[in-house]
Length: 618
Image 1 (cartoon, rainbow, N blue to C red):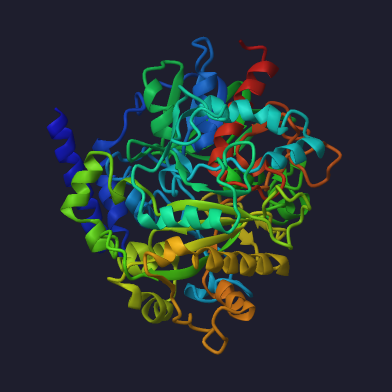
Image 2 (tube, rainbow, N blue to C red):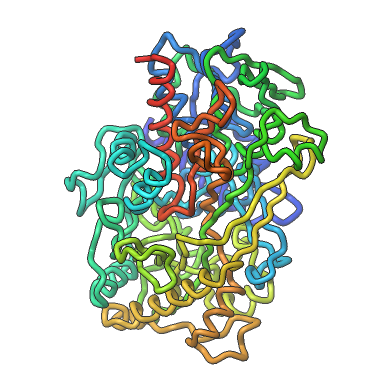
């Protein structure tokens, strides 16, 4: 049986990667293949259960928070739960290979949003629009993301608590982070800040390049402490931690639903598009959804919990009449409650760089052809090799002079050391993922093909740039409108320049020199008139090769009722509406210090306990 399983893995991986080569802008071939291959899907119970007339709880959205809530509420066999998800189940083998995660951007597991045309950012991207990848399917973005697990800084949560959200301090939320975890972290496994026996596997990478070893050693040489960034302090450097198990992606669905597929009191409906919340006066009593071209209603006896993510939750609330009164009236939507839904939208501005070459390094990672060798596929099957690890390898957290908080232990930028560059893969899937213009790909990245190169992802965590989300129309199938301009606050740009110069300093140290590492001095198009490695050059570079964190938060902001910018209270109940909560990263009040998937798991765990408490359930 093991040999059959391994053979299927090899075959599926080869098919997926070969088909990815043929994806183009007008044909989602890989997405079509995955539709055809649903027979490979994970077992989440009966795909077409006989539905109940009424459920105790309806959970809308099967991202990490919604899945955790559905899991925890259905632990009680006397409680009935309906989980509704617009997407479908993920495909094991095809989607569990960390080393090719970016190919999922070319499938229908991605909403494939793009930003509005940018004024100061994304200048080297197609139509000056950044990609806003968002997952759809059982697991949400955890089926397409880079699998990094970062909880952020303890001061984030103490700030939430101090600004009108009791119960959300670091001391309060740490147990919920740990509850989910089954952690295996080499250097920090027994430090008291990681959980054991939870549903979510958190591990070191099974494969590390000499580059990340040099990165961590060099960061320490310039004065950064070696830390567990998911421990008590974040400032410093460390190796990346992933939601991976023995070299395989562990999505929220695979982690929290697959093990409980036999629960009879949990019904899971995929391809169920929820279009509206049903209200009886000021109480949520159910939802309307479409499935298989038919309209259906589902009723909730106790609560409706919205877990559609930062974009989906805000959109559904507004379609249902909960949102800014003037906007809803303009679209002809009956106003149930006037609330600032869709406001307070934050993300992490980032840049793809700086870039380096390593002339003395021969680790067979020069380009996608070598990474996808038969040898590496065999290693992957055995749980090791470059395909068993995502592109990110190491972290450094730094404090810049432009941070909005004065605490020296509250870093505001993150350096992520990546093992390669866009120059190592010219598949259409990779082009779609980054949205880099052809001119920039050809003149800046293509010369790196078949050379050993790597780069950094420089990220501003405490961005003060804020945007909003609005409905395009009252048609639930229309994408929402995004009003967000990166670098609207110049402090974000200045912080990125600081971060890239710090990367240059770290990468000039002896451990890197021993690998023949040098800065890649070819200038990015649009910035060729500026001297290399100056503030002006890096500023231009950041505006050209802008990247985004995909860490969207804030559209259903948590805060006290007197806070006119908030949508839910500290127990995630929508202000002025009974029986309705929002539980996902959309409730996060300000740009966080971590990547949002870890926050989503924690929010789901905490929300489940609050829901049980408020409904007097054991």
